[in-house]
Image 1 (tube, rainbow, N blue to C red):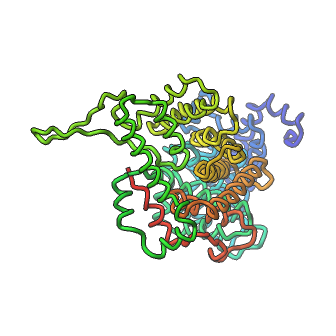
Image 2 (cartoon, rainbow, N blue to C red; image 1 turned 180 degrees about the horizontal axis):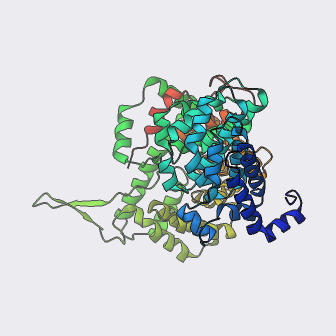
Length: 548
């Protein structure tokens, strides 16, 4: 047999592969009654599979089809059947398991998927039938982790949906979780736990029903959050986040002026009112929003009553309002009642807009026509706000980028950039914007919470897509993102208005990030001291927001 450890030996095998394989196949069949020789031949094939080209040749033996065609048809040579038959024999079980583990470790996605399809049920039986066999358990869990993780990998859909339908994911999860709890030797136990974490965390998105059937898998991930190992905590958190990802809804709230006024008239419970008073009532989101609403309505009524209909003057009044709070511009309108019928109709009153929010681009145009250099930012702010109100965030971001070329110290421009769906652009904008000289409290707190979201999302996204490895450069980037998000979360919670609608979201981030980044073991959440009592969050954050 050629040397499988040297490049020269591999070249010779490549050059004479068909002849070598035929002789090995004949020898395997000739020794049908000698399982030891068969196991030895399988071991040689296993060593060949470390080389990608040889692996593909071995698995594609059969009719004259390309490897890709056979992958799609799930047509394979009998090598897997040979391996699986060896699993039933005590003498060759470890050899067969080692072969499957090696092939699954070095195999490409189609091979891993086929190994999962054909061997997962048998591997589960091995784990359950031989609980005292540490080596068998370790190799079985490793093979399941390598293969099943490939099957369930993917974005909105699993990479191999047809194979996934054939797998009994609940039993697979049950077997690897139970194996990880057995009192094996430290070396075997570490390997089993590492592969169990990989499998259980990777499978949550596309095999979520199995976690309902076997809730022990969810408990396994939750327990992993208490690990001293950063890699384990990260992988378990990623798995929990993916568990309901496909069915999750965006936690966003719109602004309903009627609900806001109604809530204000009812007033807050005493303990919540005390929180706002301690913070400073005049700095609270509730007060700023109410004040902005009153100022905006006054400005619009003044414009309607002004015979000159001065859009330039209106724009100068609206910009300071926009810079005070998120819900600064309401889509009001003028209604006229017919004296005869009593019917109310919406009228433009001779103005170039009907909805009050649509006054913004007209005001921006009027300011630009004046041609005053120190007011160009104001025109852009009006137009950006209108784009954002109408859901044209990309247009608002583009205009903000142009504004920054002129004035990089304008905080509102940086804030607009943080609204981008691009987390990299959003995070960079938030970090730079927080250093801008022209920065209102509203823009500061908005950019800070956006920095938390962008950095947190980027860190979690890396953890969800990279193989857990503390030496992986991408994992180090993820750690940096999450630490940055945690730092910004605490700064936000300590300084932002307690009734800001994003307090709840940032609190969630603060808890999760503290759990995942804390080096020492956490037995409970007493170490997470959020500045605002958790029981107060629901009422406070809904006092100015309402779905829709």
